[in-house]
Length: 407
Image (cartoon, rainbow, N blue to C red; front, side, top):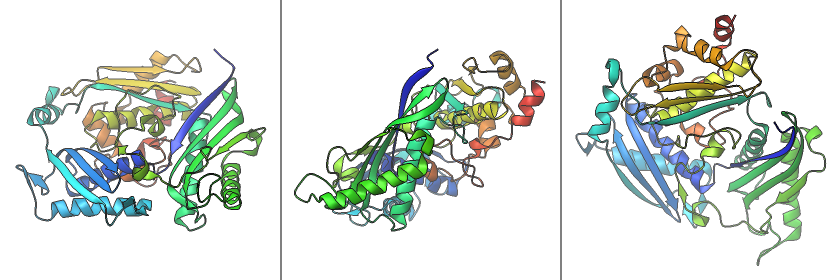
């Protein structure tokens, strides 16, 4: 095992075109779940210059039944899309919440998929798809997340908060960050590089017709201050900064690059520090195990680390479409466990209050049939403190059960 190495993770802001698409898709999920907790949604979003397109399959009582939209439903969907874009902050010529074109191509769910999900084996509903899902936790940060991703998210969250509050009026919505840390053993000891590329108002750049060195210096000083506030000073020793390294970033968001739902799955999860099954989260109701099983595996891994059973934990689970029980459960504590990984697997399967790991039991235990998803669609689905009913997979309420099961 390597004991001295560099590792990097990136994050993207709520205004990144792919994240705009994710947030729109999850706003549609929330809209339908608010009407029908048993709604089925698979909503994909395309964003580009002055255009938003929805596509996918739905089933929702009182909204879309027998192949027809209820009166006013399509208008409510369009209003939800425009309000999402407005909240993010896009009022630009190339992408404006009020004047963009909108297309709704959502249609009914496949009857063949529906029959497998609604009536799976053992008279329980089946998984909405086959696949493998991973959860991960590490003691590198208070939220039990990889430090590289944790700091990358926090930089952009702070910049977005300042932009919305009017404290950084030169910022526009689109941005990316990247943090490289040097590790000794399993702990980060220094941030060797920080990259921040942020869309900006005219002139806050070093190249192009509107270049203004004084304005760029203001933007650079601001970003450095944010980094210093987010990353502990002990890690900022000899750090190299790359702030808008292309020289200018005035054209951004969907006007600068088309966005699609589900293209930032590593940003959404663990920044590359853990495996990923390949399935995206946003736009999917919780019968889709791509989403719900990824949430339960994070929940389980976090509780294992929080219980002091390991300093790192990866958990994999697998499903077949239409089958309720998982095909496998795998625990790997990366040689940091205080007990055998097989014993942790057995302890998880034996926790009565989980009610098993079927799709329905996962949704019931975590309370996933609620409109809680739009807030997950920027700055990561994990490492977010539980806020009421939001992010329930971040709770550590299985610690006592795991300790009791393992003596």
